[in-house]
Each structure stands twice: as structure tokens, then as C-alpha cells.
Image (tube, rainbow, N blue to C red):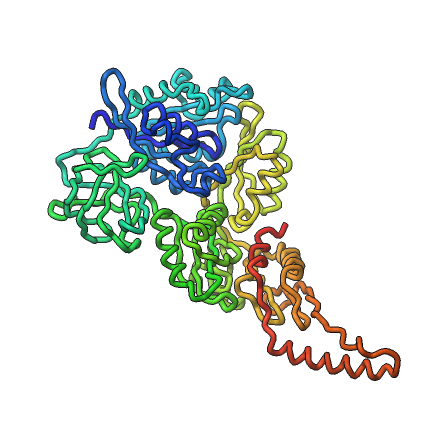
Length: 595
């Protein structure tokens, strides 16, 4: 156990952690040269296409130093703010972390938030400046920032390059020398923390865990503490590029277990594995329950696919514990699920994965956040869906979630960033100048305002320089109203939103204009209206498709034409009474991109 090191890599998005992980695997000869490719740990097509890490990946490496053999367990983590839950789980299974900072950009918002998470868990942090081979790198300036942030010595900071392999030997030596070996008792009752799981259609659910105390042998009878289920350990082993079976996995190691679990609900991330006969006294403190930030309805396009969608979401939840879902129904869309996500990118990735991995075509409704609604008696209820709002006369006030946002940017863009935040009803908390002409701005913002397009706008006004990170701060009373969209007087519940009263009229007007362009013309006039309660605040009319009934009339009395037009009008009126307007999928998506 003295020679085991468990560490993760934490960094901001695009700071080169996957490339550096490739060099570590190459240097320790974990991956054969012919199998080597860029981003070798990112095994999802989506990750390769977008150049981002979505899942944390665990892999074991063997490393020789001074005649001693060391086992290094690396857990590569995502860098995007929407996948911070993956990072928290990886940190819980490690004793040390490589903090990677881009030598050309310096410290960014996500670096700071992940660093605080690592410090909270008492991890040993090894600072690394990546991309030092580039001409635009500013290692001295970035070193100043790291020393200021971490309070470490300058000589502790390693300069490296994931592209050329510079500094990789130094990093491996630092991992062995600075990161402590895991502590634990190999003879104590078994305690293993599950930090991830995957679904395999042939072998069922495979759980990944870190052994904190005891040893797990192949064929042992094991129990999962929180769910109370008992299984046989059919196969145990360690994680290399593929699963590598072993007779036993001992204290301090990271491994996997196959026990023929068929239903995904039986494995909970954060659960503890122990022996049936000699159980541990208490479960390991897992990680905090994830709190979804953004809610949206996901509905199958074909209503018969409802059960398939349920099983697809359950299998996805195994692989992504931050996804939550509950069944719901909508008048416009039938049966589906109300899903909770950590952010908009997370929602987009889940939609894409449903399509690619499970062939599920789905409709996603307008995303919204959870609100606390207080009635006249002071009783509070949590609302995730505008259609679940009580009657206006029953509501005393509504509280919405506010976030504390950290934005780091070059000083040139302070003005536009401030304006953007203030337009979104933000409150400035503080502004700090960091070295190198950069500024850190703290804002309190309503989560509902940033959910739709805030991040995209921030990137465009700062020419991609601003980085953004946030956490939920508190709930505050707000003047919110429910905005309904009516088609021919019928509300479309999937398009209703909660919005601030000041924004309701322009937002309703823009929605009506957009829907007028997107909904196909019918045989009768269709009125598209935005309403707050019984008050209509905006209206557009989709003109009917009309056959030219007077084409055969030429010359003669005008009453002949009038008679034909009157007959057509009566037919259109009758059609309007029984006509239904189908809302296309593009209309639901267009609401997200109103600007």
C-alpha cells in the first residue's frame, strides 16, 4: 500500500489536461504505441467531436522510480462548469491532485472553484503550468498568480507541455514524492466507496470503487450498505485501458466489480460495498447529493416509446449520477419525464447521448429552474414546472434562486460584462484586479436569467476571454409572473414560462413573432397569443392557406363572386371549430434561442 498513489487532474476547460494525461500514459507505457491516439481517455464520440471531457475516467499506471515499483491511479476529470459533480466524485476517491493552468491564459474561474473543492478534501495539490512550449506562454506571470492563490513556493511549480512531453518526468516524480499513500487497514472489515458505474448489455451494471479498508476477493459475498442488496463478486479487477481481472483488490486501490446486477436502480453512486458476513460498522461518508439547477421536460416523439425512454434514462443515470428524472404528462406532448440537469450544456449532452446511444428521438421543452411559492398561509411549495403553479389569487409571493457568479476577464471587457449582468437583474458584489491586467468580478444573478443564453453572450462580448463559474447562493423574493402561450385560445403548457414582470411583455411579443414564423399555415387563421392570467399582452395571426375559389368566375355580376367567398368563409369557420394545431419540435427549441 506504501507504493500506491491516487490522484486526479483538475483544470479549466481547454487547459490541456487530456493531452497531459496522454503523455503520462505514454511515459509509463500503459498504452501501447499502436493504440495511442489523441485524448485516449475520452472514449465517447461526443467528447472527441467537441474536444471536451464529459465523464471522469479512471486508469491505473505502473511507474518505476529508484528501483521501486509504484502504482499510480489517475482519474481524469471534466473542466466545464456543468460537470463539476464528476469532479467532486473523483476528488473524494483521491489523496492528491494535479492543478493544471494554461501558460497562455493563466488562472480561470473553474480552476479556482475546483481547487477549493480539492482543498476542502485535504488533497495535496501539485501546481503545473501547461503549454510552456508556446511563444505566447507567460510562465512567470502565471507563477505569480499560482503563488498568490495557493501560497506555495515558486520551485514547487512544474513547467510542462502536454504536446511535446516537456516536464512529464518531473510530474511523475512529484506525484510519487509529494502525494501521500492512501491510509487504511487491509485487515479491517471491507469498506469500498462507489464513485462511478457503467451499464454493459452483456454483464449488467459494473461499479467502480476505491477500497478504503479491507480487501475484496473474487467470489466474496458482498452487500451494498445504503440499498441493503447482497451479491456475489463474480469478477473483480483493476481499470487499465480495458478491465483487467484480479483475484483480489486491496486497500487503497481503485477497481471494478461485476456481480450480475441487472437493474440500474440497485447501484447508487456514493454507496459503500462491504462483506456480508463481516460488515463494516458504518458507511463511508459519500459525497453531497447533487442538486439539479435546470429543469426541462423530455418527451418521446412517438408516445409508444415512453417505456424505452424510461429505461434509456435509467441507464444514462448510472453513467451520470447528476441526472434526475420523474414522470410527468403534458396536454400538448403526452407522457414524458421532468428531468433535472446541472446546466444547459449538460442538458444538450444528455439529449445527444439519448439519440446516439439509445436511438431515442425526443422533444425537450423550455428549460426552467425551481421556485419556492408561498401561499396566503405562509406554506411553501417547490415548483419545477410553470404548469404546476397554483392560482394567482392563492400566491403571497414567489422566491427564485440566486447564484454567486465568478467572472474572470481581461480588463478591456469590464464595461460590456457589467452591462450584461445588470441587464440580467444582477447585483455587483465585488471587483478585484488580478495580476496581468485581469479582473475578477463577483455578481449575484437570478439563475432563471442565466439559464438560457448567458454563457454564450458572455463568450461573444469578451471574444472568448471571460471564464465563468457559479454556485447557488440563496433564494430571494421576486416579482414573477407565469406567461402562457395560447394557440386559438388553447394554452400550450409546454411553452409556458415563469418570467419577471418587467420582461414579460417584450418576451411574450418575441415568442409570438417567432412562433408565427415556425408554425406551418393551416386551412384557417391561427391566433398566437401571449397571456398573463386572463390579460393578453401580445398577439400574432398565422394567415390561412386559401384556395382561389373565384378563379372560374370571369365577367358577370359581382354577387357570383361574393356567393362563392361566403361559402368558403362558412367552411373555414366550421374547420376552425374542429381544427388542431400541431407545434413542431423546432418551435420548442427556438424559444431557447430567441435572441
